[in-house]
Image (cartoon, rainbow, N blue to C red; front, side, top):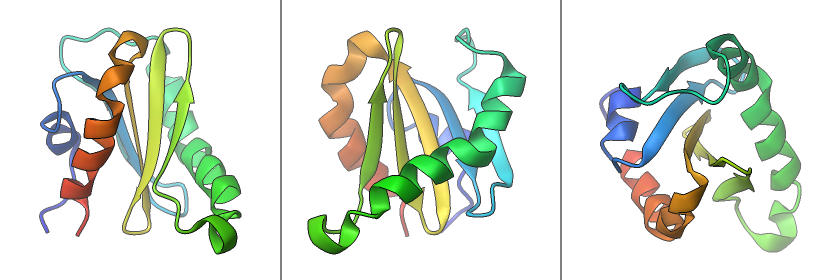
Length: 117
């Protein structure tokens, strides 16, 4: 599988605003806004969020795994955006879309499987 890049994530759907990938140790591989799209948060915050945020969200939610089955995604709705966190191998992928585009979530979550080995 080719290395995962923000551009490959953006190619899944034109409504993806931002994408970030971090290892299971919190090392940020990328944290990038789609070109031409303004960020809601400072870039330094996005980098800091990627170090621990997806790991914590995923880790807490995975605790239900023995009873509910394997975790697929964690989705958080904000006033302005929707955050999706999922696993790619051992890494944590996070991406955002505008809140008003939430109707694409089922298809987008399905399309995320194209990024998995």
